[in-house]
Length: 583
Figure (cartoon, rainbow, N blue to C red):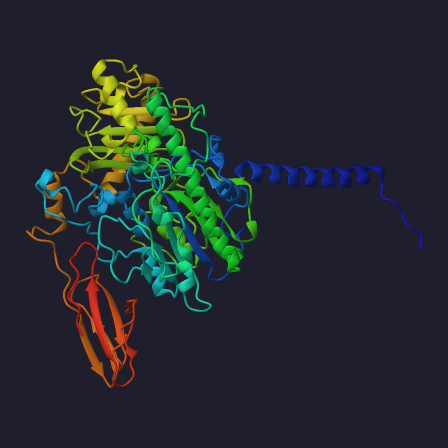
């Protein structure tokens, strides 16, 4: 059979089509690389992946994977090489407890009464009663939601949520808590908190807590922890004390400040060693490729004019996520993320639709939000015995700050912070009149009512653009966004704290109490009820020999018990006093 060749112009047409397809393919690939990664459907996860959170304290972007090569962090650098780096994660507050409240509830702290730091202490200084945050009745700690869905949930060891965690929140929360205590084939959610990077690590005598030198001991409950801090002679040195540090312009370049910078980086290196110990245990157990690993800090850095402030130095913290089988390794995702996004994302990753009451949005998983967030929000209220009222909103480039007490200076004489040698140095130079114009900004007697910063050209946020007519439209945009946010979450920034407590307690003089649970037994089938709306019910089954389990189970539906066994139960609603234990 004779074959007829296509005409020349048809060859040309086919060639052009192939070139077009090739170019389109290359352009698509290039665009994807510029975008870094398109998540959700592209991540292949086990049906019930394990989740490991490695949480350090008071952590700015002071590590190599975020552009600072002062200290070597082999374990975090490996995690970044095998995972995704998120440079735009922001806490809600520049201090730990409100931030952790947001992480565990998915709610903005100023919407649930959690934004004042240390609500259960400083009662003499403030004249206020001890109280906890009181979120809406439907709010649960995210760990309890995972327990309800069959996960073994552990926290090692810090809690600090601005409320007392219910007994239903964790299978174990202690210095011994570890996934290795879980049931066979049970998925886990485990949190490990590293405290060496906390601002207290800058105090004299500085150093590391003995409790962390042999980190976590594989869940061994028979281990005897050392107590107290190491002496200066015992403290391991991870870098030379003569290192040349890049000191931010809001701090003076003096020997004491350089010494604190050394401490900060040295503490980070020690934390990295501890992270490595936990990762090694995960690998030893053969769980590395069935686990999603998060590393992040609970807010920004530990130094003065960082911690407790709503500047990026106080809110921005590095985050790294390693997915099973190193999916999307060596990738940077520049999406704006907030701490309120953790809870919905955690649920989304295990295939659970986040409850509608959550104020954050999932950025990964099956229920990832269809639209990336345009703004993150922050707040500053009382810190220990001193109160301010500040709100902030930031987009990808600009930060708007609203000061509700402009007649009050920025600097608050928080006694805990004043133990830091750098803080003492700042105060000395202030009193001597030897701070430069940037360092003196924090100590001015009054604040601008509004502040606007271009965080790309002015990363230290020292040049206020709020009165510059060039930025009038951006200022108005962020004003409107803040007003809408405050209205949605029902935040009253300058509400006196005593009035806030009255609002949380519905006008009562004392903290509300969770009603005692009611236990019904019908033919050894146990039913539990509680008249307090939103209460979590925990229970233990005591066997015929009187053995009491260590862990409180979460009550979901009626259950059978063997003949001769007993049940004890307790009810708890976040922000309420727990009920009595009822048998």
